[in-house]
Length: 203
Image (cartoon, rainbow, N blue to C red; front, top):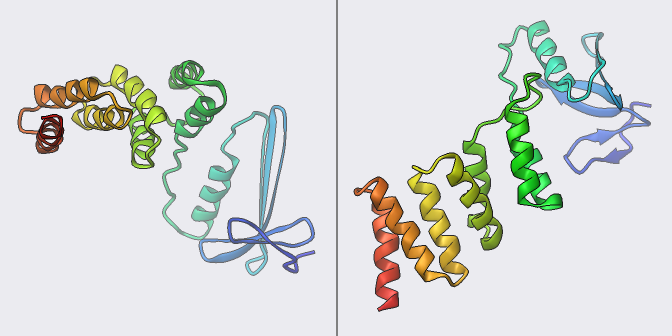
């Protein structure tokens, strides 16, 4: 049952029903279980003859973080910080249901006192930046425009939004975005460079 039979896409092995991985440089056999309102996670450290089981009667119960923290304490490691960013749920909602649904979900997760996800508005900016860097101009424009409703003083977000508008052919809006970076911070060099390059090209 614990002989490696298959490769996983993330680089571990699978035996017959057992995931064969490692944690803290120690081999483990593990498996998960879940249903609506329930989660479980099971680690076996065969060399140390230690088994850890986490059972939870709720969804998004952080069983992975709990079992890893238990492992860290057992093996005299400093427990790590465990924060799962809500940006993954935000991005998934944006892709499948659109921006309005994603915005609604983000605001709901910010109010979630169960702390199932870590919500930091800067993660929305990071998502927009990744899209801009990947030349997904329309998506980047939508996400960055939303982020600026959360933090209108971000020169970085305004500049990236300018880049998105420029590549979508809207030079007027791109100029406005670059100018906004300099309104916020007249010494913002990247904003100056972007605006000068654009105006030079327009002329």
